[in-house]
Image (cartoon, rainbow over all chains, first blue to last red; front, side, top):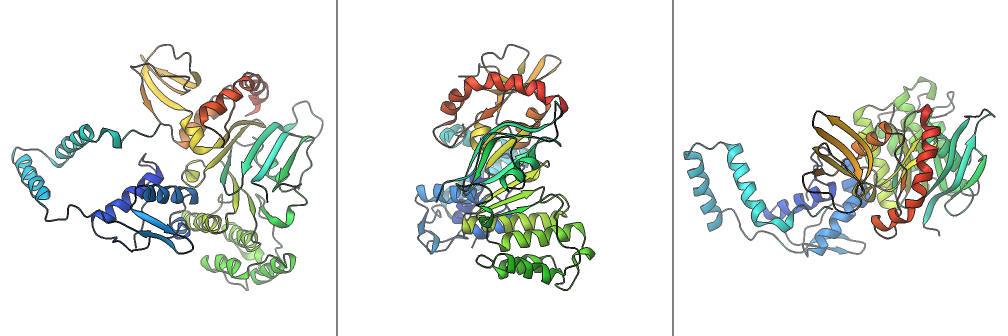
Length: 131
Length: 318
């Protein structure tokens, strides 16, 4: 089971935060196929966010094929996002790259800024779609 | 079963016969069922007057209001209303107050829900209402309201005297009830920040008039915060603008593309509300669920000019 942490000051839409945190839990293996997501009631009771926001997030996850709603039972995980577990070659490359970045004197904030700018360049379609 | 929780048509209320005695004027709005709606506005905006009309406790001077597809008095059994001063009988105990709720609502009462809300606050069922603090009384009033299992819950400044923990907890309880039973919740407040994230519909009132009404997503999407060098913002509708040196910051309703050179951002609920409160002359905007924001805005364009004038004359008291 996941527990959502909603940051009202982050500027990220609340439903997007739920989608992102669910995906993060899938990537980290905290959620696996067959696991049940908390009901809208449970999320709302714990976070005091709008019920329709939770439903919107779950619909989005369903649209992406990650979860499925079973009538009267709840929302269940269909697919894991664990394509790149902790020991994958990609992580190794990133690890070596980070070591090099550190050696050249970059600080954590510099590395984050650099990484985010490259991410933004390659994943343009994933952001700024909030009209 | 209707899909409209509240519908007001040119609703107006005048207290006394003074020239400027209109508490609410020309109020036309619609709230679909299942929404959590914030009624926001400065003191004297008409929030309590609107809620009391929906509850059937005030008769309109002009226009009309319907609730759950019928008149407010016919819908009374299916709605709950918690007034700003949380009226309860001071000589009754908490247990007696809940029993009163059960006796007055024999077909609907859910004792478990009401008792849980009281218990969560650590209240003693044997305490007299008169011995409770303001926040504890609010909790008992909300327990009565939710115990009734209403289809429509009208709350006038419900969270004003609650501590932050109780506020979060009771808001969670309210919204969980809405999630489970599809209860429509309408709550007034002037603390806008605490409503962000909890509400999906907004009625902003000012000087007895509707300033903004509609689904929150659509209202926010219809506005843009722009920053840039001083210049002309036409053809966009400017709600509010401030000039600092060579830079101008404005909240606008874009009409078509915003020229390059302007930095744009989506306003928060608080920014949207504050900009409208600081600019009482800004035109009113009502959006509906049907269709996209642009169509609704186009359809209401003709009314906007009239509203501007009306808001100017009547907004002076805000």
